[in-house]
Image (cartoon, rainbow, N blue to C red; front, side, top):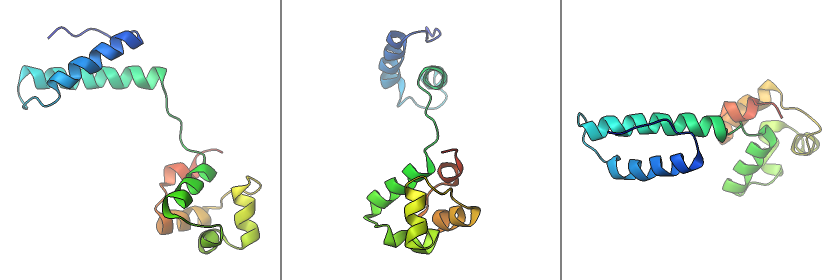
Length: 118
């Protein structure tokens, strides 16, 4: 096992290439240990150089609408009147905690997405 820090995208590519080889290693083997170390190094590099921010609450709602083929009218039980739904989707009104809970419970949108700063 010759593991070194990942300092560049080329190092990252090589780490992924090696990970493909040892990914199915049996637990307790040196290859399984190597796989765990590689995963940790890859995650650390990606988190530092390619961070993924939390979804915008409105974008999370729109994404769920698209996934489930929902219309603005379908959001009324979760958000309120058609005017209120329109205000939320156009970034003119913030989600209340009650709306967040209803959207989470009814449409299974993660709290993290609904509570992130817009």
